[in-house]
Length: 225
Image 1 (cartoon, rainbow, N blue to C red):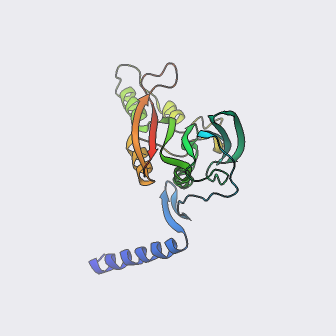
Image 2: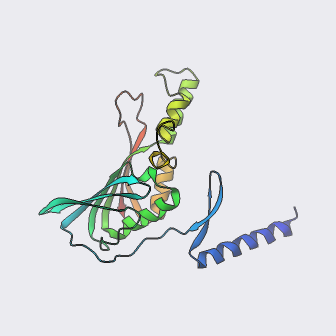
Image 3: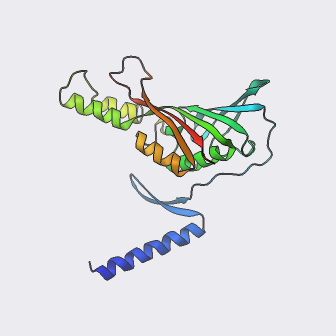
């Protein structure tokens, strides 16, 4: 292929991306192919609810992007409502001190996840905390698999256990109950920084009894001004 042809193809690709961008779309490459998807974006506040001082949200996933939002704060009995976790129009901009979640982030498809971290940033106060617990650490899991393959001390993980840690039990779980992506400290850092967060800490931890090594990531990020 000549240099002129390569340059022409690159120009066409840039033009396509530009036109899609005007329409609020982008090209999204993932395992299984290349897709045209909505560009990640935050939502907007709508009919908002009254929130307590020092408001904190605890998010739990129900299915797909649907879940439960528990509200706590000073002088308020905890309350809960069902909602899409990707769009929280009832929560005002800059009103939440902390968002805490476990078993949510890794169950969202990447495009939804990129939108939801923008939505969560919208509702956090400046410097507000996003706490993500129990992300499977692909780097640590892969290290344990290599260790097992090499017959190292500690046993490591076989391929079946690798799949269970990274995606879940594919023989029993529905598609909504399977993790949609793999994560490393580096990939999570890049994703959150790109959405306007500062990383306060990422720790590799053990969350389950009997694990041969810490295989999970606990993340503390803060909304960057």
